[in-house]
Image 1 (cartoon, rainbow, N blue to C red):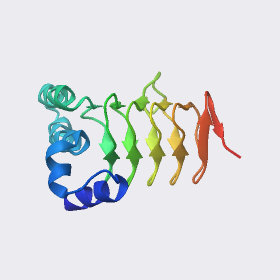
Image 2: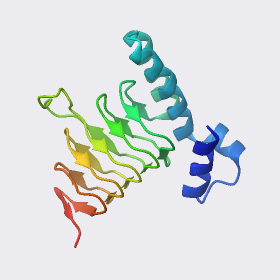
Image 3: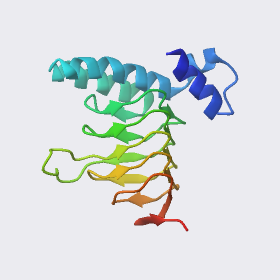
Image 4: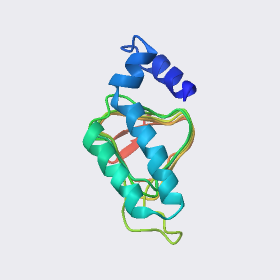
Length: 166
């Protein structure tokens, strides 16, 4: 948990103290509740998992399905309106701004419907990443972009539909 607090302190210049992160920011609360809900999801107590998820959404304005898999040190900056779907996978040390959707479309043959983000991915405010697509490590997604296809590592995606910025 301390590494998450440290990540917030490093990535959000408005934060003045660890106490502020713990008590006042919605992102760490949402991640904390997701960890509890995800535990219940893994042991197939789906109703309890969803109940915890709903309480977290009410409290924080951030909706993370308990089935989503989240790596260490995810920073959700501001957070209001963030939606992370059931089969989403997020790597370590990612940064997601407010209004971001990791949304689903029809399942691929593996049953996945949501995106998979590599490590150190940054997703700008209002961006939509849709479907069972993969974003490589160190990808940056511009604010308002709509990503509907796979992205190789290290690129910046902008536009609607998003394309690699050259």
